[in-house]
Image (cartoon, rainbow, N blue to C red; front, side):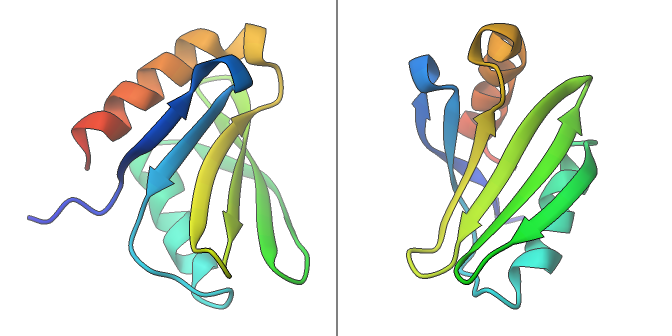
Length: 101
């Protein structure tokens, strides 16, 4: 089985995890985003989108994070609302993405 999601970079001090993912465009991202959220056993709290970026507020084990996707660069990342309060969850997620799934 091919691994769809992996770790590109973990910017621990910024509370950001850059994710490698299948190629996507603006219209396809919601399907990909839902798949990722489901694989993480997380839930979507709110969805917002602008001309070139999707920004979803998600809950992962009580920790709120932004899942962001910019389709021009095909960039996908998780970003903590509060870096200090999310360190344990971010470390766990970075390890999960490092192994790939």
